[in-house]
Length: 245
Ligand code: HEC
Image (cartoon, rainbow, N blue to C red):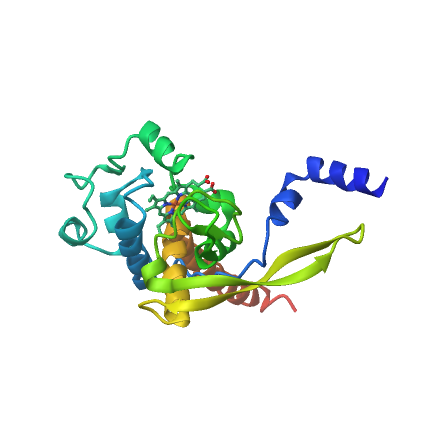
């Protein structure tokens, strides 16, 4: 009975099922108003992700404007897969072939931060681990049996899982991952890698909703206006009522 109830709950709230995917969810703590962070994230994105994933709703020139870069800076440093600054961030890899190579096509990433959320993405990029049973020799704690290789392994290094035994509701014992341990150092220290992934996730979050930068900017002026307006109307009220008493 209890199990049926849980099954129904999962069917009704698929989010719960998603949440049980595996492993902890780390806090991304991104700051999309930090232009430097977005610029570093964009650099990682074009260097490490754009070869397989597109961002086909994002134009290079819009990115330049939003991130505080000039067109020529973008052309020189961030544009390897396109010729014209007004083009979208697409990839040359045909979708069908990609599906054949990887078993699953690499999805477009323009809106991925809206679908998964920054914390999920941050955790995903931190939790690849060595697993000989998988085609690329890696698995992922957050997204079990994912068919993406760990493209940032040179930066992060290689992690191996440390297991513990856990009893399920019926008393059966299972081996589950307790934590991931770095067994081969990467070019970056763990702190530097976390910070790089934070930049990358901030960039993905920006792409998912470019107007959020504008909203923050406008929001500041709206609040300032309200404060000034409140002060003025208070003074005005005092002035009007001065002679009434
Ligand atoms: C070598 C090709 C390749 C590269 C490079 C690559 N990916 Fe992937 N990625 C894939 C494939 C294939 C999948 C589909 C995995 C699946 O569904 O099992 C995927 C899936 C994903 C997903 C999960 C999407 C979902 O279903 O929710 C995310 C997020 C992601 N990639 C982000 C990135 C980021 C960020 C980078 C750059 C650091 C990157 N990928 C680089 C091939 C790649």
